[in-house]
Image 1 (cartoon, rainbow, N blue to C red):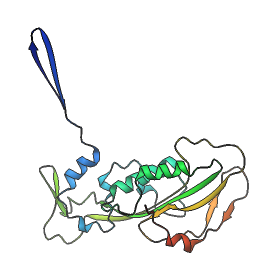
Image 2: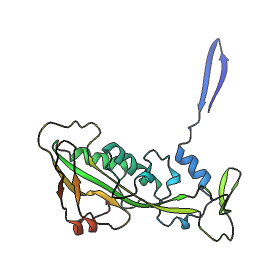
Image 3: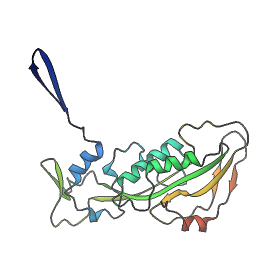
Image 4: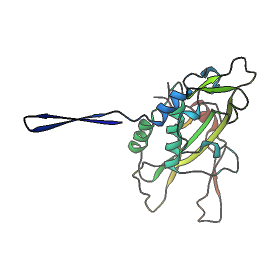
Length: 220
């Protein structure tokens, strides 16, 4: 919002402009969701708090799911991070990007994996009388018999590169780094399939699943 005022002093015109900051999507979402009891958000992540550009619901950790891109991985992590009610122990999106940039060597690439359980509001929650709207805000319906929150799982994996990186010709090595295997639930990676579609055979390698399971969360 911009407001302007004019005043004259000895022939000079003074312009006063007052500018109010435009609320972010998350600030607007927090205003609408604020009255709800968050103890029913069992995963500690409410995806409705952010604009869902990464489309987490399309990456469910199924065997048929494909890998994604480094840009999508960092966008997904940013959305998950900003959906968290308790961010303790997680790198900020900026810290993760800085880590990728400082540890990039050109031909050795970290494979990133996100495995998160999260909640989102059921689109039928108002119809089901689980929540109601008053003055543009959402409130819990007293004495409801079921939760308005649906629990889902997302699994996103990709080779990771800094935003400005360009791939060079030649042999490339792909590795796992516990810093980029990030989760709010324990999980094991038993096998990784690398297939660039340029050779007839499919290559496999087996990481140390137990070690990754113990280091599944990013720590500052």
